[in-house]
Length: 224
Image (cartoon, rainbow, N blue to C red; front, side, top):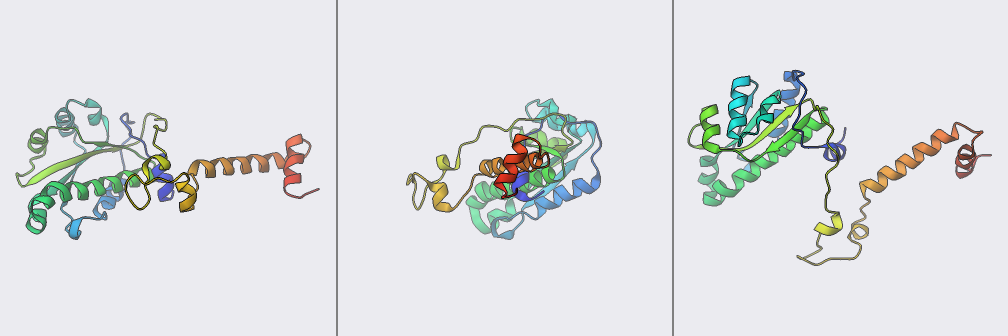
């Protein structure tokens, strides 16, 4: 699975199978977070991997009682060591770069999980002090993001998204063009998927030469 496909397939999964998660896959997910970009390459993150049922329950309680979190085989708490960032970048490093860096790590983890056939969910709502007590996180470290990982036990439909035309400006803010996709030479993945499906359909029909579709397929290919 390439990166684009992982991005398209990613969903927020809140229901997991009880199937244990292989440590090899857990390692690949965490390592993807380690390889994320960070401000000044300071890599301020620390990853707390939780598999213990009692601790997962405490994490779920701290996440405003989102108890589905405890059903995930693995819960990863992404923390930042803010003193490292504030030493180099002051208050901006502590309050902004720490969040950005951990967010980059979380996205890497989620996409890697998707590529491995796993479900995941990004959780931001939690009581920081409760999380720190549950995981014995020191005062100079701040929990930023929680990511659940496991084999999905639900199929989540594709959520509605703005189109690229809705969110893109060229050269300056609010400068729109009627056809930004054409300007960028961009072809929507929806169009690509439709073309591929049509091609596959015609190829399959071509195998059945006695059908009307089969004859049409051969004509399109220049066959007799």
